Image (cartoon, rainbow, N blue to C red; front, top):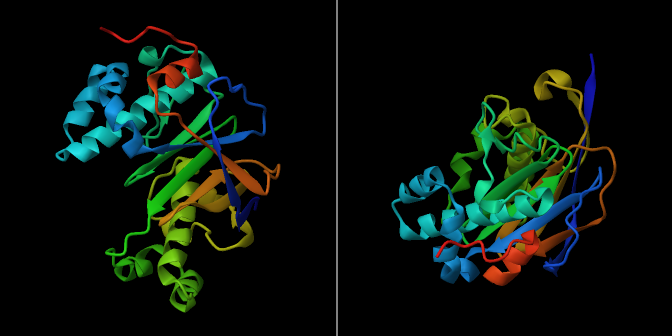
Length: 267
């Protein structure tokens, strides 16, 4: 029976401002992560919403809380800016298709893989020519994760959490690993979720679980205070020990410069 190799570890994170003149080309083994601190973009909401289509605006309006509507408008529109920078598509014309598990993709650019995650004040976008998944979580002090643990973790994983000095950090580390991995696989959370590997080290996985024989790397990282994340990357090539996370600029001038589009906002 064929097997898949999965390597899981922690990575340091290097934050860097995104230069509007950055070259957005992707080589075969590149993995690029963008970070969005959502509160910094609230004043741009009325400009950013103009880059959403009618269905996206309707989706935003279905959020009951204004803060959730604003967050969706911000990270959805900026996702389109990022994709435009990598594809030269017009931001307003960027259209998403969806897999059966509702993972968005660009039918016009099937070589470009991307994934987005958001939690409270942050959103992150991972871009690659290989399959990729990313998940971030705000480590809420009010969330009682003890009731969730038996349903989503195997015995050894439960033991790691229960014996950890910081049980909350251990829970969120292992959770984001499973979540990022299934997002990269395009599976979603299903009956296999409990058996998705999430502990440090190298794992040899039965292809019946992954439904293929691809090899993966997972790297956990601290995004900000009280925020943990993991990125899952479909490749054998080892990425840098330090992940570089680019901070998206919060001016329309710089966002437009990213895509080399100017004066394209409706009056």
